[in-house]
Amino acid sequence: MTLLQQLQNQNGGIIKTNSVNITQLEAAGYSLHLIDRAPVFNKETLLHAIYQAGAFPAYFGFNWDALEDCLTDCSWMTKSLGIVFILSNIALLETREANTLATFLEIIEVVSKKRHAQKLEPLYFIIAE
Image (tube, rainbow, N blue to C red; front, side, top):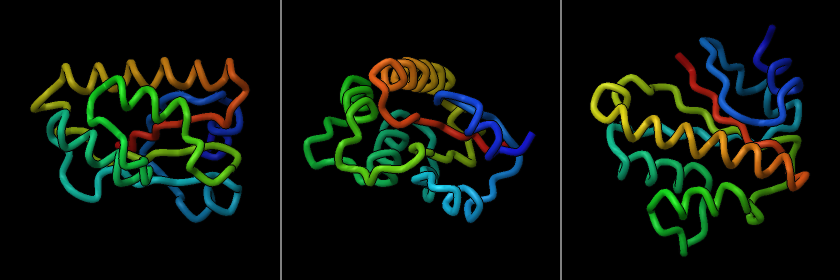
């Protein structure tokens, strides 16, 4: 199953894959946000990278609650078939701060379910391995 098919068959959440065709996803109507343009190795670098990738509002508080609130809202983002964040180098974060990664993934699952329940665009986090 291709990544595009996985996105179409899920209502958001985390998808692990080893192949991401950015052009195909954009052409299909998804809003893409590349997270790790710089190394992500702890909570601070992760939150900053997501803030930049998603063009979060200036009031973003750089903490877990702020992340959950902003990802649930996303009202400043252009409407699309779904909001897709892509994290392509998770190994460094996993090695240095496994607890941070676990908390982050838990928040993504919670937010994805909230957005689905509120009938908002799906939120996906793609982990490219």
